[in-house]
Length: 167
Ligand SMILES: [Cu+2]
Image (tube, rainbow, N blue to C red):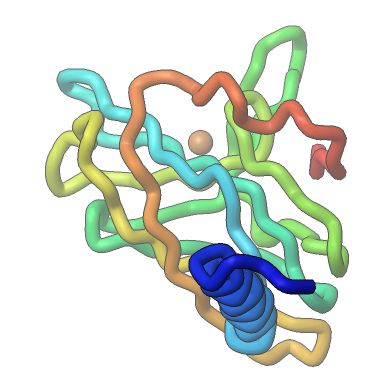
């Protein structure tokens, strides 16, 4: 096809960009044990020393989430929410199964990360780093660090896609 030179250059550039995007999306899997989306932490309110972290995790191979840590808090726990005697309670759990290729949501009202004894209040607009502690099917430990923007409210577009909900 004979395109005028500028258009030809544009088309070549598009092809080149497409190649770059395609090439950069696969090494993510090669290096990271999990793919994380929609990560956010809840802003803490005055006097509150704990807060929650939420995200959607997809593991490449069967894996378990066994904990987390963040420089923002003294320690972090993996929690679940469940109704007991008509009261919503949360409690620590040891681990959460991450089946291969399935997005597992940690969300308000379900499993979540709990950041205990925050060093400073979590303020909207800030971002905290959270290291996920994982264990693969062979029992080998893995870590994956994500950024969690601090927000006051559950993002509107979060978790509405059909997905495995680990509850
Ligand atoms: Cu909790």
